[in-house]
Amino acid sequence: YIPLHRVKVRARRWFTTHKAYTNEYGYYRCASFKRPANYSVVWEGAEWDTRFGWFGQAIYNGPKKQGDWNLAINQSMHKTLAASVVHRVANRYYNGNIGGLARPMNLRKEKICILNKDGRSDYWGNIGMGALPDIRIYIKDGNNYRKTPSIFATVSHELGHVSHCTLLFVDLVDNYNQGANNPALPFDEVYGFSYSTLNMLLLLSKDMESLKENLKIWKPSFISNVQIDKLFECYENNY
Image (tube, rainbow, N blue to C red; front, side, top):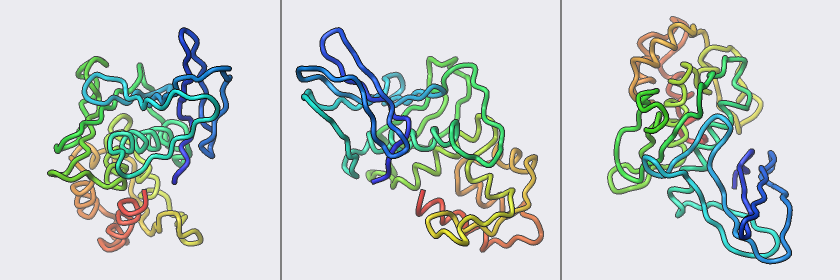
């Protein structure tokens, strides 16, 4: 399992609600009740809200119990698994290390909706003024659910439209191969793209596949298509 950082956990009994946020190891501590309490996870951050469907806040309702409660999200929990992936991407994007790139200056929370059907994920921007979702993430491919690396890559791409920046873009610009000494990180031989080029390609690309093909067209002369394919495989298979 991958620990989730900064996840909001609530414990409620009658009119009293305690909340806490997970640490980098996925653990949390909140005030306790003497009797059983209703536990839940609210999928939101200070800068974003995740929704199940177009309008409903994404929440995982846990058990009513006394004592500790821990949640292990498995592959059969499709919507909750997708919400956890959205959280991982958004938390890194807004709070993690993205190589010094500028973070988006939200005027309000970004609204990201998870749609439990087949479709093409997209970024709507501020078209709905927060009433409608800014980003739509479809989690099915035909009749099958998409794998988490695919969802991770799509969320990264769509969030990148907020300020023309994704985690992948760090690797496309810098000449540091973080995977050379750590096989858990992307093996990155691609570098030399300018921010202006990446901004242009992000606007031209509708999904990760079209982004990859556009990068090959606009790549620096010293970068090969094979190197770009290998970098994308790292994100598609591991993130």
